[in-house]
Image (cartoon, rainbow, N blue to C red; front, side):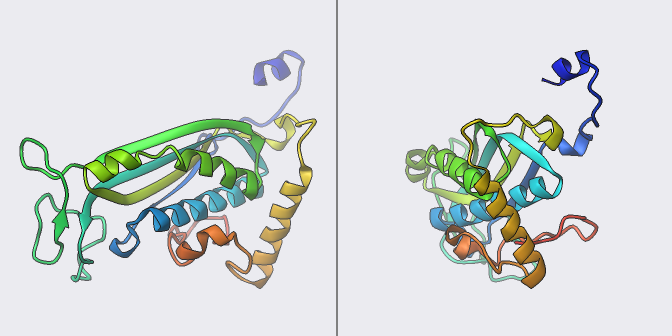
Amino acid sequence: ERLWHLLRGVDYDDLREDQKSIGHSHVLPPSMRSDDAAYAVAQKLVQKAGMRLRTLQMWAGAIELTIKYAPRSERPVADPKLRAFDIPERPGPRHLQTGSTDQNGNFIKFTWHESAHMIECQDALTLVESLRGLWAKRPTERARRERVQPYFVGVTLHSLVPDNLHSLDLFGDTRRSQISKAVDRINQKYGSQTIYFGGMHLAREAAPTRIAFQSIPDLF
């Protein structure tokens, strides 16, 4: 599409390297290492990514979901100095683990990811619907068989295009984008999470923005 425009003499700003994808990820604390909590975090992450899309006036044409699995924790980490993502290979006195092991006796861990194309969008509702489709494909049977649970969730938006290169959908519903932008304005004015999707309620305090110099406001 860019080549088509260039051949016709259309000038536009190229995407910066850091704008070719937008993503957020979060390491789940032991208390949130369940499917329900992980999905709530994933919804929060995709809504944060959507807010960044709208702030940057960009649209996404693909979405990717990443889930990392590790042995189950039977009790939370008691030592505050031990980070939640420091998962030992063997059970320790403060972090009792159960799960399947490989032939060397090491606990099994694995990473799963899936992606999907979508009609160019930037609204929260379409992004959440796309995320729901990916979530339904997660390896539930393997996780149950190997006795592992999610400890990391990441959502990335790909195939980004700026407003001036966005392909209009003749049958699209522009009200979705308008609603999302209205929610952004309300959250900016009245505070973080004044309005949010109910699906992320379990994760409303999780996955805060931690980069101090980030220019995008932390609406979630």
